[in-house]
Image: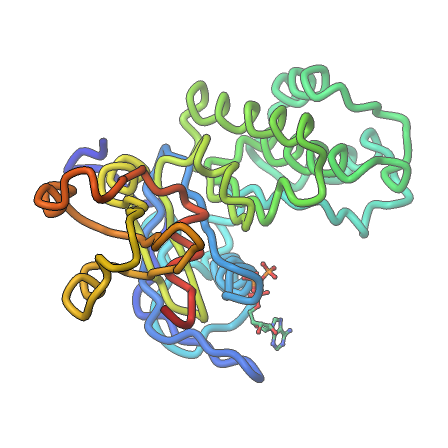
Length: 289
Ligand SMILES: Nc1ncnc2c1ncn2[C@@H]1O[C@H](COP(=O)(O)OP(=O)(O)OP(=O)(O)O)[C@@H](O)[C@H]1O
């Protein structure tokens, strides 16, 4: 768990941004240093927009973004960030050797030893053109460069989407190992919540440009439950207890946040299971109950 003196790598304070048909109002959250923070939300919730604002690729209307304790527009902090993505369109005609020849000099912190280490670990060919790489290889290639300039903060936008389950797992293992060995801060956006159930320490959940939840995985695992029971248990009072309810052929299923002892009086009439991130996302964004 975080200590009192824990640093935040990123802080958003009341950030506001209007796009054509979409707006973010008073967005505030923190990314703690030295952990994996998962950023979840359905399609179009504002994940990429948030990352673009963080990277100063998109202008903010109001508010303040702090990176490593300074303003996010500070060019120097860019050196500490590794942005990992699978679209290496600028480099399609190049191979890894060529990319390195112009990326390495851009970074004061370039570490050739690390580059060689991860090149072997990720089993990437140095002479093959990037356009001949698979999606997973492109993702690994992007991660290779981020690690080689000793990025202290790695941002990954949907790193596992479109990867087969084996490759996905392998990539997640690499990410987890990095966090443990190199004490890196990792921010990983995904709508594949099962990946984050496995590796995230903290979760930030965004929906329609608003933060719905920011908690440690430990808190989430101790606080959120799926409650199942017969439909006749649901009345105006019990309905109030739940975040979202679904009727099934067997009865009801609902998301509950809080102390399970509240249901002691129901005995065997209800069943409680720990909720997954997918359950939480599903019930928190459900329109009707
Ligand atoms: N360049 C743009 N100009 C105007 N609106 C945009 C632009 N890019 C995205 N949007 C809008 O901003 C909203 C949020 O999109 P964003 O890409 O941030 O969501 P996301 O959570 O990353 O979604 P996904 O999981 O589908 O990638 C969407 O309604 C989208 O239509």
